[in-house]
Amino acid sequence: MPNTALTAIAHIVVCDDEPDIRDTVSEYLQGKGYAVTTADGGLALRRIVDSEHVDVVILDIKMPGEDGLSLARYLHEHSKVAIIMLTGSAEVVDRVVGLEIGADDYVGKPVDLRELLARVKAVLRRTSGQSAPWGEVTPGRSLQFGTCRFFPETHKLYNAQGEEVAITPMESQLLTVFAEHRGRILNRDQLLELAHDRGWEPFDRSIDIRISRLRKKIEPNATKPEVIKTVRGVGYVYS
Image (cartoon, rainbow, N blue to C red; front, side, top):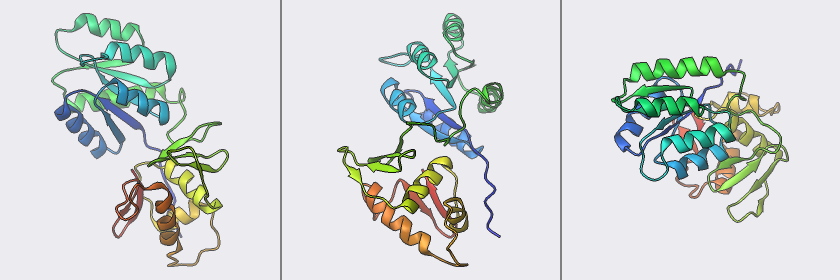
């Protein structure tokens, strides 16, 4: 029987202008089973939050340009995302202001990764039920796939120029399944089962053909896929 038991995973964004901190925190949290995206500042963070579902933002207070406090205020006013501030040990006033404008918690620098993980888990427990789980298809929501944008409600796909790209019902289902399980490796049986294709036979590799066709529509370079990646010997992952 196909193994389709899957657990929704939280999507965390790490926003810090220091590459070492972004990479270290991102790698650690990914190793703990979370989907993680990084942002080097306010512009990148706003773009991610406006286009994807995000559960938690780990946000540095001191950044060039738009600082973390301004971004925390924006996030609190325009989304239900949980916020954990990264602060220097001497930034007591900033911590207080951050909490007053909507931050859920803070962690001091240098970051203790185990403490950060504990605070992420605590924030997720407190906020569960306040925001939709990652991947839930809500009315009017669109999802980014490479250079294209997909609208699950209407089953329509548009390229970067706003032109509609023709997709089959099965391709639409596959896009929805990948969106609902972002960052999770899915094998062929899981994909066929979740996409509601009941006409498949054991060892059927038609899913490979369908994904190949889909890649030609959404990947900047279908010969080197970066959106829907192959995990050799296992399956596929939407990254």
